[in-house]
Image 1 (tube, rainbow, N blue to C red):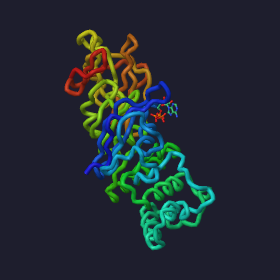
Image 2: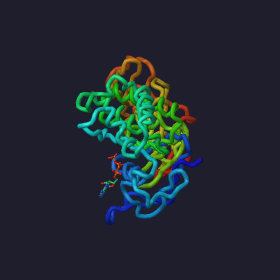
Image 3: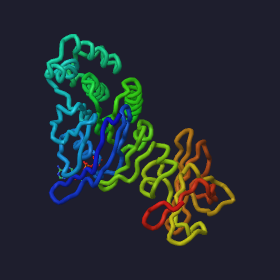
Length: 332
Ligand SMILES: Nc1ncnc2c1ncn2[C@@H]1O[C@H](COP(=O)(O)OP(=O)(O)OP(=O)(O)O)[C@@H](O)[C@H]1O
């Protein structure tokens, strides 16, 4: 069944068009991630789904019902924000139960849901604390718990991990993935972090300037990007782009090759000078200047003792490369 259907969603603020003709379907139980550069309209689209912004055009359907005229509280959604948005004067339990109390739910149901959510999120020992007595990660878990107890038709997450440090971000990311498996819930998640998109999503929606560039599973988008923008957006370090002429190809085309697909010390299609070496422990990133402003990043999945300023050859398998025309469209 369809959990969410967007048809021809457009949104303008005054004369500025922020969302243009967006069509999208989220099936029940699916984890869909919106990614794209800052200002591309991810949060606005999420807010339109939540009912916090009205679409200028188009329809929003949740669980088979058109909800354009339905206020946010009645849409069957629960939203988790980057800023947690907890009530500071309420305890963890108070924050988690408030919406259920306002809905007039029974004491037994409320106790059962809080027990379930706090167990899932390891919050049992913190129920009597106030948000100011919690760490950032714990506060975000409370915000997620507050969403879970409502058993919404659709969870909406707006960059929920951005305020956490790197280690906590990874732990909480894994926790969100586990919750999704346990709850079989439909989730829409906004991030500009491509690692979150790749690891959490069943389906990624890549947005640019208010339009959908491509929709697909993480590996579909990674292995088969529709255009240069998507190819460059997913993958870390990002794909290298070189004028095809530089490698003996046709003028006007751009060759795309991922850092992990370039071989160093190959007899080489090209050679260049190593300008920087990043030793990451197990892996090594090497920047090679091929001249004429072409610098490629090479990702080696091992330790490597290549030296800055040394001259190296680079090579790659043609089957691992992409080519794009001058408009950025994929040619091969
Ligand atoms: N209330 C508003 N009034 C006018 N313009 C707005 C309003 N809200 C958002 N915008 C504009 O709409 C565009 C999209 O904003 P939005 O916050 O949706 O982008 P985003 O992709 O979520 O960006 P980020 O990753 O930086 O949060 C931006 O150019 C922004 O300036």
